[in-house]
Image 1 (spheres, one colour):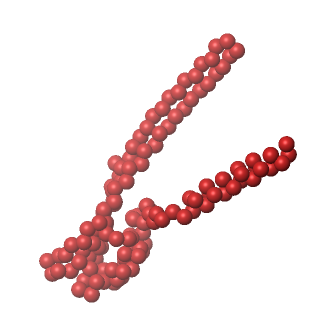
Image 2 (tube, rainbow, N blue to C red):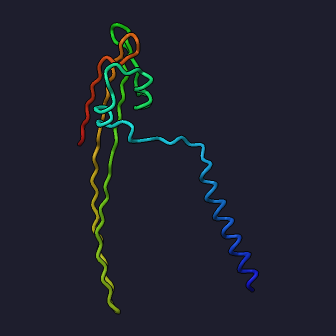
Image 3 (cartoon, one colour):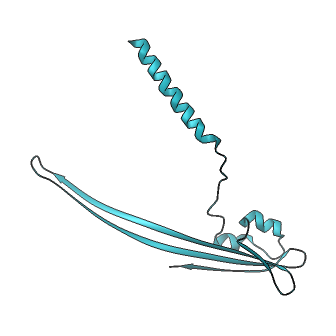
Length: 135
């Protein structure tokens, strides 16, 4: 009886270890949602930075275009939606009668962040602007 318990325990540990390791070999790239923030633009983007430095900080832009002098303009546009679900419940039970009630509410907030970075002929930041909204 003791030997079969050890076999079952060993089998369970093996399956658990294999399952845990199987999740570690994922080929998915990690996406950092917090890359584009107002604080990052205000604190880290500077006139004179190279396009490579900007790309390292903020990632690839959503739109790349040129101005009337054929200088590049990068546009980052991020929209996020936050949803908060709130539930409150009360539960009372008696030997004969049980009651429960549940109240729920949800709220939704949308935020946008648009960043425009203008480069000079040498691909250095010559100007940048941003706009953030929340509603």
